[in-house]
Structure formats: C-alpha cells, structure tokens
Length: 141
Image (tube, rainbow, N blue to C red; front, side, top):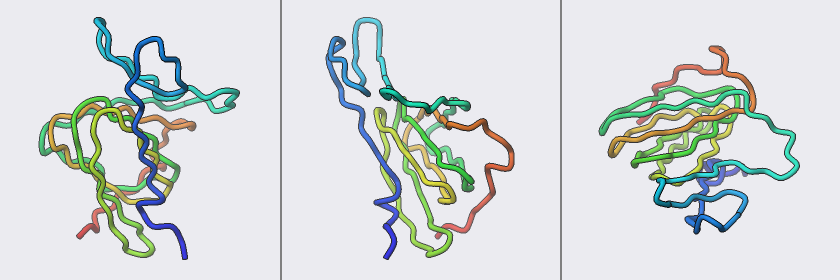
C-alpha cells in the first residue's frame, strides 16, 4: 500500500535558536528582527531557480491547482490551512500551518490554502517556473 497524504506532505518546523547557535536550518529573533535560515545544505548541488513571495489576507483562499513538480514553501508569518487531495485515490487531508514551518508537497498533489489570519509565504523550486507547471483543480469536498 502507498503512503498516506500525511506521510507524503513533509512539514518541518525550523528550531527557534539563539543568534549564535549555528544549526543547518533555524530561526531566531534579535533586536534587528526575525532571521530564518530556510535552507542551508552542506555539499548540495541544488540551486534554486525560482523564489517567490505571496501573501493572503484573513480568509483569503488561493491555489485550487496542482503542480507537475514538487513545491517547497516556508510560512514566514501568520497561520493558514493547507488542504490537499490525491487525485488518483481521492484521499483528502488538511494541515494547520504557522510561521516557522517549511512544507514539501510532492508533484501532482492537488491543493489550496485558506488563511486563518494574514499570511506571508516564500515559495521556492529547484527549476524555473513555467506556466505548464500548474494545472487547475477544484474538485475538493
């Protein structure tokens, strides 16, 4: 049997550290504000070709699509719900996301977001974005 949606969608909370705690991925607050080191891979050959920022107001919805490649997100501020659906099995799940969480969604997973409060999100990919990467999908229960 294949993996459940909860096993396929990867959520990682960046640890809240002190400024001089040099972990691979982390975040901290200082007099200057918040710092989030979202990706810091040792000896990685991955280079990010697409980095984008998006925001939504409270109760804002966006998405209702799927991508033909994995999607990486970092929740910078706020709280939102991520709703996902496996288009083949029909399985649906939702995840509560908040500031400090990284998300990895596999290619082909239909999804939409509902902001519980104003949110700011950073989206990044290892390949440049192309219009053909996104297909509309609105068949959620």
